Image 1 (cartoon, helix red, strand yellow):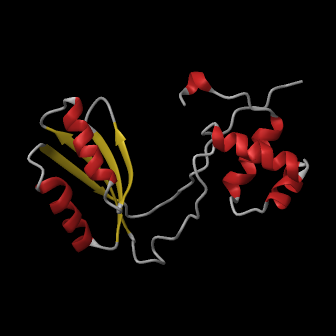
Image 2 (cartoon, one colour):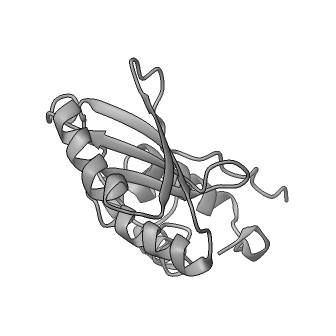
Length: 164
């Protein structure tokens, strides 16, 4: 869905989305109470938002440090050949790697920006060997290592509810 395919979201839909961004583990009854609607209406609206692709999925956000994955790397990748098949091939390999949390094709500049979450530098080097070094089409890799995470917020700003 692109920005021209926005579904009609009313104030109740937006309240549902706001609550789910804060806590997707809410029961339907708790969610309905929080957004001031009936449980049946809430369930129907959540289903509609899921079917429309507005809600892509619901997940738990885990602490990388408490689970031994405390090294975050932001990596710029430039390929030698940028044909559609080359971009798709690298993208498929990158998204298949569990430590790759985010994979973005970007322009201008590098072809991809990756966000990696690995336990330590040896794990990072192993990923580098699999993903970058063994691919003859990778021309340049520039890695940045996070030394402090000041903010991590997956919630997106929601549109203003329609008046009326």
